[in-house]
Image (tube, rainbow, N blue to C red; front, side, top):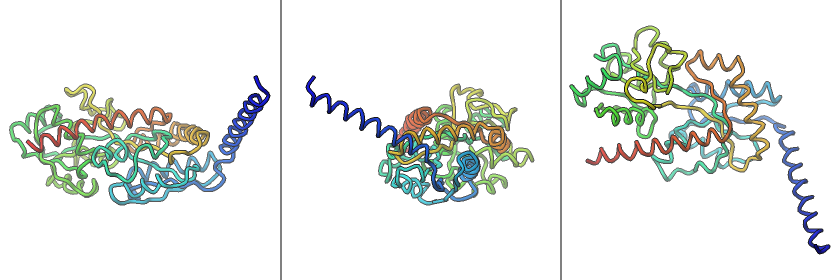
Length: 327
């Protein structure tokens, strides 16, 4: 080997070692200032609650302030795009909903951001859905609902938070599998649906468990099924949709943590470890369960795989729904 070639190889080794040391040092020093977690929805929702609870625990464990900034608008797209264009230095993060990455790109291919603009960190919490009905509905389970809907096609109304929402697509999937038809009534938000559901003007909806629990406990609403794959702790006596004739059926919202693409892997690893530790710690774990959330915590690969899987599932449901609408 020539002297020049040997020098070049040694130089590459030194540069590589220096670069690796610099990235390790960067992770060791991070966070050196406050870290912002963007929630692309209004304050008070489940994502906001999850983000603030996690921010508190990360502040305690990492010794720097983590704080939440709400940037609502355009169905979450404004806040999401803000983080996509932020510096990839670990100081701007996104508490994202599955809707933003598993549904949004299928519904609107012209979004100002793409999944590749983000680095996955960890799943944080599932927001399990419950098929909740007004007590006057003459059905107490999924099979009873299907039978009732087939006897009265199009006469049972269900609420959704609009086109491309999990509520719409999950209910559509159930209709496709059960071969029955409900009438969708879109609202701007689930908070607007609840008054109509409680009064009986709206008959049915797949709603998040946290916002529905008080009304189920007071018998102002009744639960026909939960959308999770397995029964959930907060509603242990309510069977899943999967148990009621549709094996493998799963429909949940979930919240997950992302950083801008290009964030140093060492920072991602440190953030993921601390997030998983916080979510699985006794305090946060119990707080989530008590409010109807299911704590998760995962590796970046597990989060990316779940987004890919759900994106494929909801794309298929959306195609079938659009085909049915144009018949």
